[in-house]
Length: 255
Image (cartoon, rainbow, N blue to C red; front, side):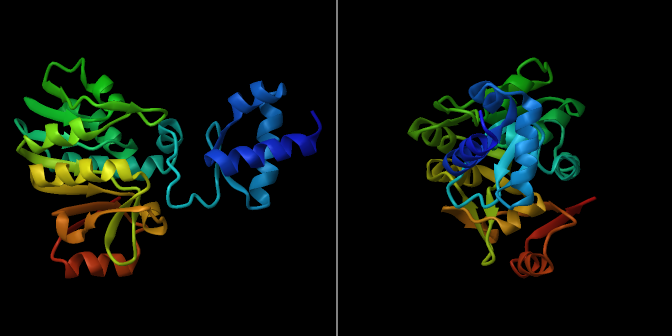
């Protein structure tokens, strides 16, 4: 295949899906993975995409683009680990927790081996798989319909299930935090689930790396007033820090 044809195929994939996985495209186009990586490097220089481990994502993600789980796990890895470590400090032995779906809550789930007698509710299949073999954790899965590539369980049954619960803490993820202090999500189907998670908890802790402050989400989940604690990293804009404090919510900067 000519380089121009590969370029067109890659750009189309970025426009349609928002991401490219190099190995898959190499197989599809019948070229080497190294060739696709070189093509993506050129497209990145031209502003079409941002390379990630294993591929690339569209430079402008848009308000409804939902990235695959494996792509999200490879972005801002250090920041997510720092945020998860701070979040762990808020978990006490014997707690009942809800873990929202997402790569940052997954990072927290990996650390829960340090705690005892936890009950963890989640609609994230990756988190459930991770915690299922831990004898110190009583795992509760919400059920629901699995969303392809992101391993999230969705549907009215999930909302109804969570509405019956009362837990100590909900650790919530976000796709975007807007300049007016509202929390956004690219997938409208998750909004009612996240809102139920917040209502079920005595304390709501929002986990969001600083990249989320430059994103825009299609659907509104809530505002800073709906959470008790925000944990983010040092890249959090000063304006947002002031807004969080004005809302009389606790801000933790992970380092």
